[in-house]
View 1 (tube, one colour):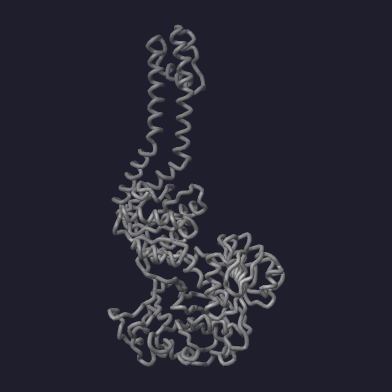
View 2 (spheres, one colour):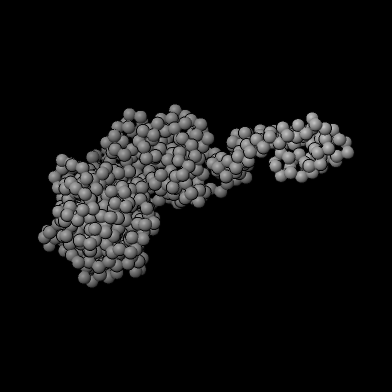
Length: 580
């Protein structure tokens, strides 16, 4: 989700930026909302929270989130941004309409689960940005499953670049390396630098041959590697086909048994009628028997002229046939139209090895599945609820979905857990995720496991105690993006280093821009920003060519900057411009 038109700002000169601070209201202080509120507060932003439950922090108003009196008390008339952080889409929409009546030009960041509704609102309403916790955190879970310790992502050059934090210790290969040697690399971008022992910005460190030292922190984004979808070989297709036959045999045993009983009754009855009266052709006896058992009738003269014993036999077979036919139709209907058919079809599609298992196909799980599938990886999902809202979407992407309880060993063995690449336990219940992860660990001790947990502090403890590969909280992963979006502009990425929030964005250079006619390196050292690359009418600029470039009209500068300085960049009047 997000706006279809990117907003680039006209940045004012830095010496006149301290006249006022933007005021932000966070409405709905659940887990995610309170995390965003605390993060903005730590950045020195003037922020007010509205909660339905009392909290001990300063700057929080308790009351009805939709009440105009409460919104006015929070200062909505002169606020610059309103964050709608409730997990209820309907409630957020009610607050949105009330807020726009009071302040028609307030910038609204709307947390919505319904992505289609969010896109329509972004296109219809000005100053509206819809965001989703699952859309923000899902790709990071996918990066973790791929074996990367990604802390976030950044949208650059039409692709999502995973970001990592490099903590330089005594054994790190970059310890003692010159920053300039790390700078000039097209497949790697230095995003943010936090030195341990001295105060120096990243660009100055690059230009003055600064060396990385123990304790330094460096945020790096790497170009995503293209992964081609593997075409199934004939051998693999045959294996999948036979796996489907095995699954079909297991699921259809009852239907097969009742079918055999039905055929036995038909043949036995037809032979009985022929043996009593040899003048009756076998086809006529067979036709009468089928009609008798199914209730369709036909050739009743076969039984009318028969002895009394055969008439009694016919009556009994009519009753038995009605029961057998009823059971047969019920089992056949369940096999073809019920969940068994999907399970049989999934068995044919199930990858045999080198695949990713997603347990829990909710909003986060579906985002992960989409990301892995788009990267050319084999994916299989296990979902307990047969009515799950994302099952059809996953199957439309040709992702097999098994309807079962992922905490059971049979369910995990059915998706070939011993030969899988990684497993992600991402249901909406923390205890279920822990149970699934522990079961998976017992079945495949060496399998990389990524676990979802709502509580960030508890997530770290779970990872340490149970030795899972990663335990992550969607709230912790998504909160910086909401906080950065509240500060304005089109945010391309963000992250946290220590207690400092930084954001990535793009700004269009025009003759009235404060950066116009100035060298990128000079601007970077003055404003403590990091230039990532420049899109010019003649092409893209990277590395040292980027630093020496003098910004000209229609250049687009992509940069990262600390959030506590970003709030000052939106101080002047700016006009949204369409990204090229």
